[in-house]
Image (tube, rainbow, N blue to C red; front, side):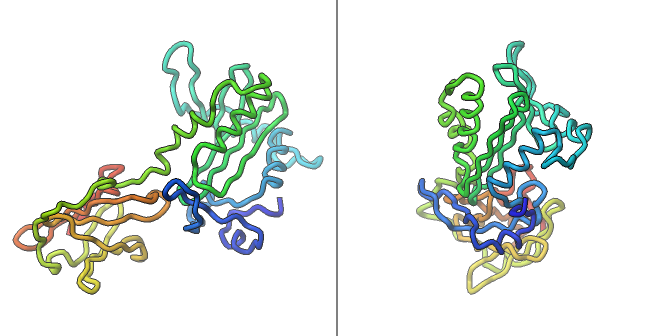
Length: 294
């Protein structure tokens, strides 16, 4: 596998490389380039279909490639066999979903075990693989487009063809609907418009300063030419402007792989005696830890 790496610099060094495409207004557009080095073990590998096919052959051959045992079978088995439940059976006739070490492990209607996984980033990556060891077959689908369910549908229909010779259902419809939330805008103000007659905010000096959150760390709010700007992250490198919404409430447009096009969030300040004491930002409320205190 000489075209595979978990280093972003190796991907950039390739002349023939795919550029990520995000979905904007229903169309794929090459707008962003994500640097996944900090998440390389989970989502930062760049590869090719040819290289991935070599990897699948190795897995299907119990860790052997080109006559060489690269991984001992007893070391590989735990990875591709159930270790945890990812979804319990809903009734006596349904199957539980299980996970190995980096592999989904499931049982097909034919009774055959399939090991699989898919990966997705809203900025422009949708990938999937599926292997059926008992039939010694596998498929990998790599795209440089935001996840819309296409790659999962292709792998599922392939497995249907292997077992039954035809598709058993409309996999595209199922997966497209199931992944709709990945490319949906985020933030509590998405789809909202600012009040036509908004109340005035406190003076900008009321909001300027540092605010701390035990989970996210410290943010700095500064005045940049008469507009509030938030700087967050370990080095303050993630910045975004605040736009007045109503009273001491502002809005901002989040960016990044968790903020598809159209995302809009609130930034609500608590003000006491003319000074902001905290700010709550709706986009960061997944774990209800979205409040920073001055």
